[in-house]
Image 1: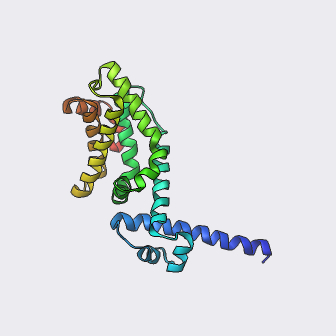
Image 2: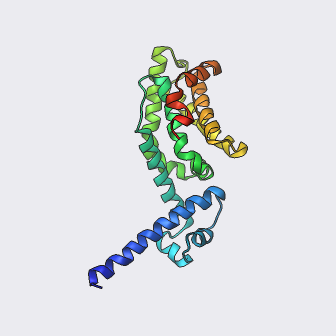
Image 3: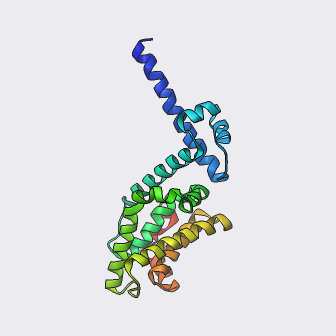
Length: 213
């Protein structure tokens, strides 16, 4: 084996071990958000020493998972947009939910803890899109205009966080959670429950779970 080949092999092993740790952490922490690094190491088939070679603390491992998750959500949101601002808010709810619903427990830890500030810059464009949609909807008369758009956007985000908490308590299915995120967000925008249901039903191809498995 050449010197260059010997040098490349450890790097490949290190990269593989790092990914194994992250994948194990994603699985374990979604079942038990308080799981230790030792538990994660055993699941990944690695020693404790190997873990600390990549992540000096549990918090650094959580931070990397949060960074990757936020980037994935941001990319998913960029993949689709609706011209109608009310429909766009509903679409945002669907896109975000589809990215986080399979890691709900870990997502709750991130959004309710100090890591929320860390991912803020990555998710900032989503908030700005909500603000723009809320402003547009208010001008069109299809969304509330009694509150600043910035506050309406935060109310929509708060509604989504509430659904995330409820999904953990009530073990909502993927479809139920998605539908509730959309309805709660539209309610925060100012739509009645009948109006929100009507919009969802009229746009099933875009918003329905079976349309985007």
